[in-house]
Length: 302
Image (cartoon, rainbow, N blue to C red; front, side):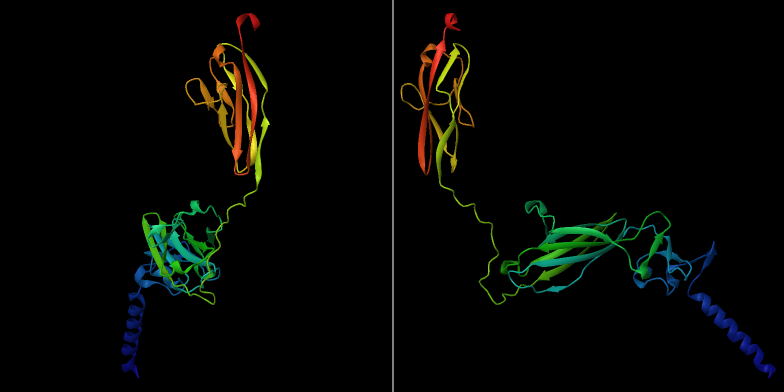
């Protein structure tokens, strides 16, 4: 009976040695720290495989305290790897990103960043931070944080031309980058001739031109500038042309300018500028004209 005692003691000692071979804990202030080789089962696998060393706190509050988080990290995952929408339908991509510091997300189509400013549609892309699940409720003791970001990309109308396109979610956190891809396969559906709606041009309203502002008689001192009004309305927008006292079209130059509102400006008025000036407005549905008489004033008539 006594001959078995040393053997039992040796077995116990061997078990103690084995139990300490997997990890080398150090204790301080109710926190047990483990090196990467000794990852405790309470720490989520995806965390224990990605970060160097960490510590676990009380099991009662189900919180994990990361003790040494000195490296930037990011991981991006698109929810579905194979996408087969029907032509004419909408498509939504979701990219789950976890990283530290807070990751930023860029969407690409066939390797080219998607420019949302062209569509000016806030609904096409949306990123928002979501809370970690209870198994990954992490606290970082170096004042950084592991953050989950859910990136959303919406394509309002899928066409057959989109089939085969590769969409990518590129995530950046600090100095680290990670990217995930998915390829779009579009099926024709019941109506293979379906085409996405395109913005229709505004219907053309038939409205003949009308001159709404003009002055029949303009008197101005010689040497000064004079403005002849000719403001119009109509649909389509009327074209404006001016004709001088000799019946010829007024050509723009150093002394004659036609403004954007249709008015004519004569600079440094002279006696030879006296006469009737005609403004003509025309569009597809008609034309109209009005006359303004210019009378230069001499010094004794000012």
